Length: 133
Image 1: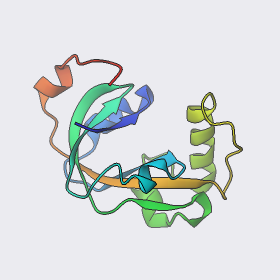
Image 2: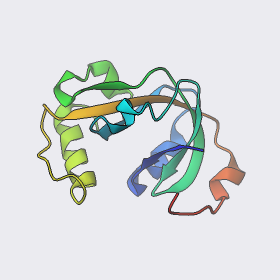
Image 3: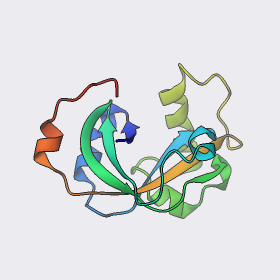
Image 4: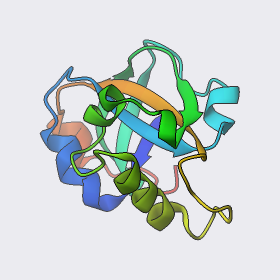
């Protein structure tokens, strides 16, 4: 099953998100968008540091745009502190600094995936899977 992976500091927020509340994740570049990696209504794992936290259902089509073109609606579906372009750019720089050599600015393209978290399953949360999935 495909996944949306978040860094470890997001683990508790992933657990605390209300089921079926629209959420979003942002990935640098067009790769996920060009390959339509996630499909509408597809069930995926939400992971924190590659460990399963819960499942989610992809909500709608992927969106590709420049960071400066993200709407307030996009930002309200991201985790709390990613509430504007500046905070998103800082997060992306910190998260991807080792792997992404291009400067990150308002002109940087991103792919946005929208999803609805499913109810937390305690068995799934306790599941020890391959940490490199």
